[in-house]
Length: 284
Image 1 (cartoon, rainbow, N blue to C red):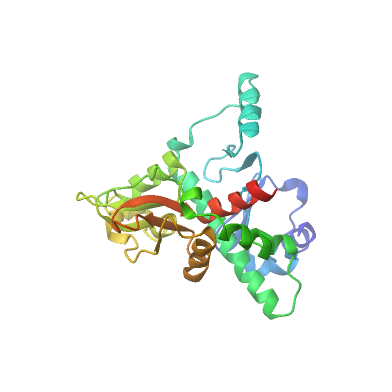
Image 2: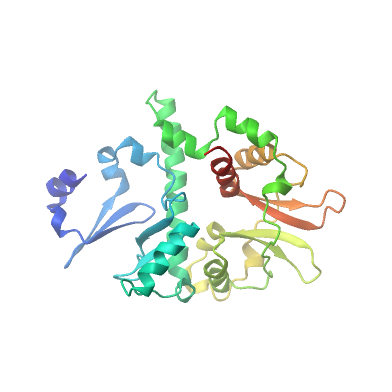
């Protein structure tokens, strides 16, 4: 890739300050200039292991650290484990780093999540194309998106109620898209059920839905107008394997869990990340 940038754009490695990713280009930033390199043009210079990587933010690390994109000279830090939190606190108390709350910059976090989702979806397309073309798909990539047969057997023995999140954060349909971004920064979730004033779940809103709204309209459009109303749901006594099958079938990342005896009562939410973390925690 570095040879390609040098030959095609006359960019030396020591000139590059950082590289950002948009939906269709790598944005190479240097001290006095910026170059957009179309993904389609760079594709042949990217390793297959990178093309098929779905984990843009290192979900299984103690700390995930990367550029904050919209905030020059800042990085986003995601604390994922207690060990990571302890390490970060030591750096803070020793004065090595300066921090600010991501709640102050909801659009920056939303951008990171959007790029992460784009990277995942693009990697899945790459894997599919490679399989169809008879090209070897790195084993690590396949394992990161689909459990192995032995892991599926594990999920068949676990009920949804054992892995779901019970304290569900729900939003009002009157919330604007701009306010929704603030909720993402506050709760660190990218999908929320929407409950109306009567207490009824009327839909689900995700970051992908919100990003379709032009920035200048986000203060006037409500999430109730753009949410998904055709809900895919599951019950607490279903197996996690059944939940994963539903997610795969409908290409979604979360399921709302309803009480089997009262099908209007929301009792939890189960995400694809919950399932993958369950596998790692139980087997590894």
